[in-house]
Length: 288
Length: 212
Image (cartoon, rainbow over all chains, first blue to last red; front, side, top):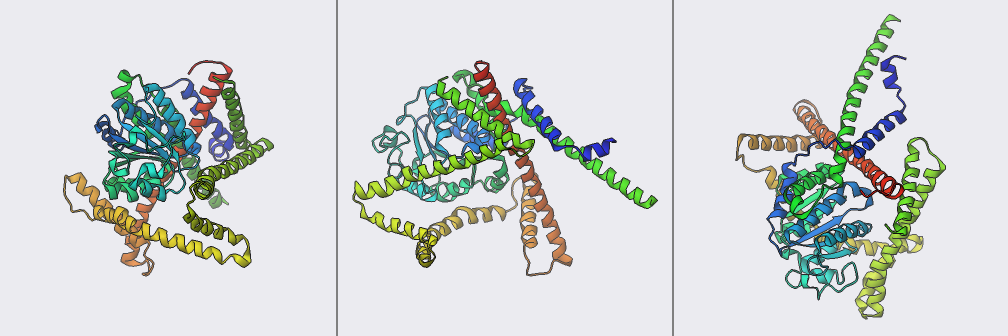
């Protein structure tokens, strides 16, 4: 069998094996390829970096385990950034399957930075209602989430004595696997005049560029690449002072690049082979 | 690492391999993992509904707080379930009418002020700034106009309208290409996430007992 026929009849399991190897090898032996932060991600980082110690930020972790590799590193990085700056995050999720991952991230970072729940941060957990929840928080966060994730009454918490509604937040960050960014923009950020940034799965990133273009969001971190860029910025500025190592997104980017190169080459080679086969068929038809 | 965590990692690793086995071919291990996932998901959501909605917002509100206003949304909620009984299905229309009416009242002004108008004003922004910014503005304007023409079906797509809609088609194709590129990246990210778990947490963390 010649090369063209071999490529066009290649068993898809061979391609799967090559992809698996291209993922596994860089994870075991990292290539440490450079990651250059884009203006989209810098737009989120700079806004959070501008916040003063004691400022409040609302972080909506609207994702579930299906988007963990793309978005959990971003939540970890943003929480680390907030704690390093002394900013107080209010973390919630509008996704029923979101609290588990958000809890992992917030407990991990709070323990590392020695932060106290109810004073330096609050993990509100999940509440049913999406738009109704956001509108409720525009009026009052402690009335919407009467208790935090651990069942403690929010009204008496020190963190809610000087900031208890969306307008009191200095920034909103939506880490979204679905279409919650538009909702946060429409029902909270625009009406209350609070700047907002977004992190989303790569699948939905193109859909949020119009919001970025219209300055309705200050920045956008799309997929694992966006998270890796944010980690790079964070480690570059605070890594040494606060002992922040590169996160899972940075570790995964070598594998991502390797597979992308393979896919691009596979598309080019397969197309060339396809056109050669068309030409051959044409020649055979003419001979016949 | 606790015994519970180790057992959890073994179960997660086993289920990951079961799901990956479909790549070779459909088999009983994949089927088992698939059905287990569905069962666990349904159980989880029923549990969440009970603990997050039914218990605090209905049972507790009525029994402990004596907030009898809760009867109204509760009954409207039960009306939606009436769709399961054909002779009473008409009751659900009341709930849907209330929901759609209320939500439209909230959504329409917010969508117009918070999304539609800012997008429109940014699209029709005056040509200011540097050369590249003006070029970007022209591209956006051209893209919006030609794509709108592409989806305008009251005129036959021939001659000038056909040429303009063809330009719109190019913009749509570029958008699909960008979305596809991002989709590939997203799927590879998920694969990387699973391999990170298998290599770092399962093989190195549990089997070889190395700290990562």
